[in-house]
Amino acid sequence: MKLIDEKRLESDPVYRFEYLAEFIGFESADADAVQSVAMYLGPMIPELVEKTYARLLAYDATARHFLPRQSGFEGAPPIDLQTLTSAHPQIQFRKEHLARYLSTLLGRTCDAKLVPYLDMVGRIHTPQAGNKEINVPLVQMNALMGYLSDTLLEALFALPLELSEKTMAIRAFNRLLWVQNDFINRHYQS
Image (cartoon, rainbow, N blue to C red; front, side, top):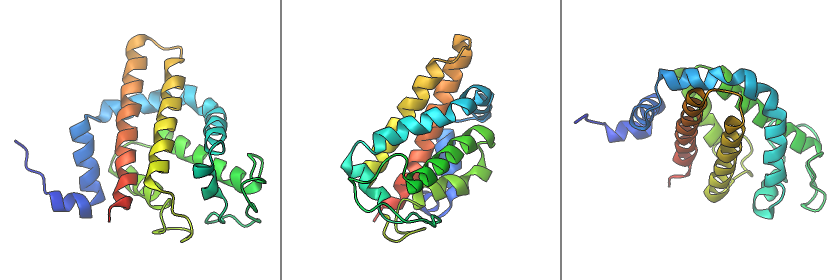
């Protein structure tokens, strides 16, 4: 039986990542599988982003989090939910962030060097980073990650790959997104 320092899981993000990756089974072959589909998924990122934002803006519980000025956005934020559209400059700014996130997952090695980024993705949706007014409830983050996971898996199922390659990529993304989800959830602990 492997011994795990549970206190260290809370204080050392790299240790946490390594534990999660090992437990879930996210190995170097999974990281390779994620990168192997970049040539297919990369061009699909704009479509994946549009689909995700259409869903986010379809519900007041998720859309309302785009009303406060987003950290780094210089323009005027939306006035209210009625004027919030997919074309609003702040939403375009946020879409660019999601596109960069997806590109990062596809283009970077999925190892300890990725940990600060995965952790930051979780932190920026809370008052702990960026704009103190932005505090996306955990239920909305889980909804987003569930939707994003399903959207990515749907795209992966449609790729022109052999079943074994497709299966490997699907399982790899599933594992990686569970690790990401933990790095989101950790910032919601009291």
